Image (cartoon, rainbow, N blue to C red; front, side, top):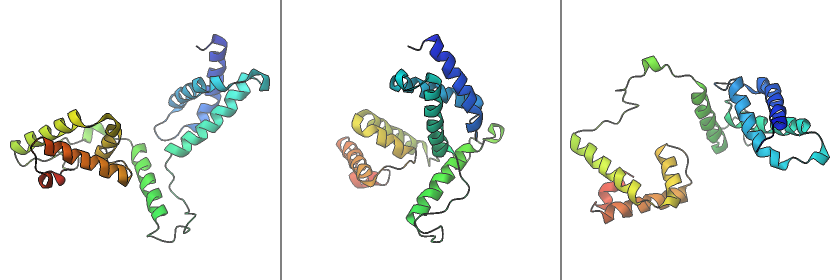
Length: 193
Protein backbone atom coordinates (compact mmCIF):
# COMPACT_ATOMS: atom_id res chain seq x y z
CA UNK A 1 0.00 0.00 0.00
CA UNK A 2 1.33 3.41 -0.97
CA UNK A 3 0.99 6.26 1.47
CA UNK A 4 -0.20 9.69 0.25
CA UNK A 5 3.28 11.09 0.94
CA UNK A 6 4.92 8.40 -1.21
CA UNK A 7 2.33 8.95 -3.94
CA UNK A 8 3.15 12.67 -4.02
CA UNK A 9 6.88 11.92 -4.36
CA UNK A 10 6.24 9.39 -7.13
CA UNK A 11 4.09 11.92 -9.01
CA UNK A 12 6.78 14.59 -8.71
CA UNK A 13 9.58 12.31 -9.93
CA UNK A 14 7.46 10.77 -12.70
CA UNK A 15 6.50 14.21 -13.99
CA UNK A 16 10.12 15.38 -13.87
CA UNK A 17 11.40 12.36 -15.85
CA UNK A 18 8.55 11.78 -18.29
CA UNK A 19 9.43 14.62 -20.64
CA UNK A 20 12.93 13.25 -21.25
CA UNK A 21 11.80 9.77 -22.29
CA UNK A 22 8.91 10.32 -24.72
CA UNK A 23 9.34 8.68 -28.13
CA UNK A 24 7.31 7.07 -30.89
CA UNK A 25 3.74 6.62 -29.70
CA UNK A 26 4.80 6.82 -26.02
CA UNK A 27 3.69 10.27 -24.94
CA UNK A 28 4.30 11.94 -21.58
CA UNK A 29 1.29 10.31 -19.90
CA UNK A 30 2.42 6.84 -21.03
CA UNK A 31 5.89 7.38 -19.59
CA UNK A 32 4.40 8.71 -16.34
CA UNK A 33 2.26 5.60 -16.09
CA UNK A 34 5.33 3.44 -16.69
CA UNK A 35 7.10 5.41 -13.92
CA UNK A 36 4.27 4.63 -11.50
CA UNK A 37 4.56 0.91 -12.22
CA UNK A 38 8.33 0.94 -11.88
CA UNK A 39 8.18 3.03 -8.70
CA UNK A 40 5.61 0.73 -7.13
CA UNK A 41 7.97 -2.22 -7.71
CA UNK A 42 10.94 -0.23 -6.39
CA UNK A 43 9.40 0.83 -3.08
CA UNK A 44 10.27 -2.53 -1.52
CA UNK A 45 13.97 -1.85 -2.19
CA UNK A 46 13.97 1.62 -0.62
CA UNK A 47 16.13 2.01 2.48
CA UNK A 48 15.46 5.28 4.35
CA UNK A 49 18.92 5.19 5.99
CA UNK A 50 20.62 5.65 2.59
CA UNK A 51 18.82 8.80 1.45
CA UNK A 52 15.52 10.41 0.63
CA UNK A 53 12.77 8.64 -1.25
CA UNK A 54 12.86 11.30 -3.96
CA UNK A 55 16.56 10.76 -4.69
CA UNK A 56 16.15 7.00 -4.63
CA UNK A 57 13.19 7.07 -7.03
CA UNK A 58 14.82 9.61 -9.34
CA UNK A 59 17.94 7.46 -9.73
CA UNK A 60 16.03 4.19 -9.95
CA UNK A 61 13.43 5.42 -12.43
CA UNK A 62 16.01 7.23 -14.54
CA UNK A 63 17.99 4.00 -14.95
CA UNK A 64 14.88 1.88 -15.58
CA UNK A 65 13.55 4.36 -18.16
CA UNK A 66 16.90 4.26 -19.97
CA UNK A 67 16.50 0.49 -20.22
CA UNK A 68 12.88 0.92 -21.34
CA UNK A 69 13.94 3.38 -24.04
CA UNK A 70 16.76 1.12 -25.19
CA UNK A 71 14.41 -1.86 -25.39
CA UNK A 72 11.54 -0.16 -27.25
CA UNK A 73 13.13 2.58 -29.33
CA UNK A 74 13.98 2.09 -32.99
CA UNK A 75 17.46 3.29 -33.91
CA UNK A 76 18.08 4.04 -37.57
CA UNK A 77 21.84 3.53 -37.55
CA UNK A 78 24.12 1.18 -35.72
CA UNK A 79 27.63 -0.21 -35.94
CA UNK A 80 28.12 -3.93 -35.40
CA UNK A 81 30.80 -4.82 -32.87
CA UNK A 82 31.56 -8.04 -34.78
CA UNK A 83 32.00 -6.79 -38.33
CA UNK A 84 31.59 -3.01 -38.10
CA UNK A 85 28.51 -3.23 -40.33
CA UNK A 86 30.60 -4.23 -43.34
CA UNK A 87 29.64 -7.92 -43.67
CA UNK A 88 26.13 -8.45 -45.13
CA UNK A 89 26.16 -12.09 -43.98
CA UNK A 90 26.93 -11.28 -40.33
CA UNK A 91 24.36 -13.07 -38.15
CA UNK A 92 24.60 -10.41 -35.44
CA UNK A 93 23.83 -7.64 -37.95
CA UNK A 94 20.92 -9.58 -39.38
CA UNK A 95 19.35 -10.13 -35.93
CA UNK A 96 19.77 -6.45 -35.10
CA UNK A 97 18.33 -5.33 -38.45
CA UNK A 98 15.33 -7.60 -37.89
CA UNK A 99 14.82 -6.34 -34.33
CA UNK A 100 15.01 -2.69 -35.45
CA UNK A 101 12.65 -3.33 -38.36
CA UNK A 102 10.08 -4.73 -35.92
CA UNK A 103 10.52 -1.76 -33.58
CA UNK A 104 10.24 0.69 -36.50
CA UNK A 105 7.06 -1.02 -37.66
CA UNK A 106 5.57 -0.76 -34.16
CA UNK A 107 6.39 2.96 -33.98
CA UNK A 108 4.54 3.76 -37.24
CA UNK A 109 0.91 4.80 -36.82
CA UNK A 110 -1.74 2.84 -38.70
CA UNK A 111 -4.29 4.68 -40.83
CA UNK A 112 -7.41 2.81 -39.73
CA UNK A 113 -9.54 4.37 -42.48
CA UNK A 114 -7.43 2.70 -45.17
CA UNK A 115 -7.21 -0.78 -43.69
CA UNK A 116 -8.62 -3.28 -46.16
CA UNK A 117 -10.18 -6.30 -44.47
CA UNK A 118 -9.81 -8.36 -47.63
CA UNK A 119 -6.11 -7.58 -48.03
CA UNK A 120 -4.24 -10.78 -48.87
CA UNK A 121 -1.45 -9.95 -46.44
CA UNK A 122 -3.91 -9.64 -43.55
CA UNK A 123 -6.41 -12.41 -44.23
CA UNK A 124 -6.23 -16.14 -44.73
CA UNK A 125 -7.53 -17.37 -48.05
CA UNK A 126 -9.37 -20.64 -48.04
CA UNK A 127 -9.98 -22.64 -51.18
CA UNK A 128 -13.37 -23.69 -49.91
CA UNK A 129 -15.48 -23.97 -46.80
CA UNK A 130 -14.29 -27.53 -46.14
CA UNK A 131 -10.65 -26.39 -45.74
CA UNK A 132 -11.72 -23.61 -43.38
CA UNK A 133 -13.70 -26.00 -41.21
CA UNK A 134 -10.83 -28.50 -41.14
CA UNK A 135 -8.35 -25.81 -40.06
CA UNK A 136 -10.74 -24.57 -37.37
CA UNK A 137 -11.07 -28.15 -36.08
CA UNK A 138 -7.28 -28.58 -36.02
CA UNK A 139 -6.77 -25.35 -34.05
CA UNK A 140 -9.52 -26.39 -31.62
CA UNK A 141 -7.82 -29.75 -31.04
CA UNK A 142 -4.44 -28.10 -30.47
CA UNK A 143 -5.90 -25.53 -28.06
CA UNK A 144 -7.77 -28.21 -26.15
CA UNK A 145 -4.96 -30.77 -25.80
CA UNK A 146 -1.67 -28.83 -25.82
CA UNK A 147 -0.07 -28.90 -22.38
CA UNK A 148 0.10 -25.67 -20.43
CA UNK A 149 3.92 -25.60 -20.22
CA UNK A 150 4.10 -25.52 -24.05
CA UNK A 151 1.31 -23.02 -24.59
CA UNK A 152 3.28 -19.77 -24.16
CA UNK A 153 5.88 -20.74 -26.75
CA UNK A 154 3.13 -22.07 -29.05
CA UNK A 155 1.39 -18.68 -28.93
CA UNK A 156 4.71 -16.96 -29.65
CA UNK A 157 5.11 -19.21 -32.70
CA UNK A 158 1.62 -18.27 -33.92
CA UNK A 159 2.54 -14.58 -33.63
CA UNK A 160 5.71 -15.15 -35.66
CA UNK A 161 8.00 -14.39 -32.72
CA UNK A 162 11.29 -16.17 -32.15
CA UNK A 163 11.16 -19.47 -30.29
CA UNK A 164 14.43 -21.39 -29.87
CA UNK A 165 14.69 -24.34 -32.25
CA UNK A 166 14.72 -27.09 -29.56
CA UNK A 167 11.51 -25.74 -27.99
CA UNK A 168 9.95 -25.26 -31.42
CA UNK A 169 10.70 -28.88 -32.36
CA UNK A 170 9.17 -30.18 -29.10
CA UNK A 171 6.00 -28.16 -29.72
CA UNK A 172 5.76 -29.23 -33.36
CA UNK A 173 6.18 -32.91 -32.44
CA UNK A 174 3.58 -32.64 -29.68
CA UNK A 175 1.11 -31.00 -32.09
CA UNK A 176 1.69 -33.78 -34.63
CA UNK A 177 1.11 -36.35 -31.85
CA UNK A 178 -2.16 -34.65 -30.85
CA UNK A 179 -3.42 -34.57 -34.42
CA UNK A 180 -2.38 -38.18 -35.01
CA UNK A 181 -4.26 -39.23 -31.86
CA UNK A 182 -7.38 -37.67 -33.36
CA UNK A 183 -7.23 -39.37 -36.75
CA UNK A 184 -5.08 -37.05 -38.84
CA UNK A 185 -2.20 -38.49 -40.83
CA UNK A 186 1.16 -37.27 -39.56
CA UNK A 187 2.59 -36.46 -43.01
CA UNK A 188 -0.59 -34.69 -44.10
CA UNK A 189 -0.55 -32.35 -41.09
CA UNK A 190 3.22 -31.76 -41.05
CA UNK A 191 2.78 -28.98 -43.65
CA UNK A 192 0.35 -27.16 -41.36
CA UNK A 193 2.68 -27.14 -38.35
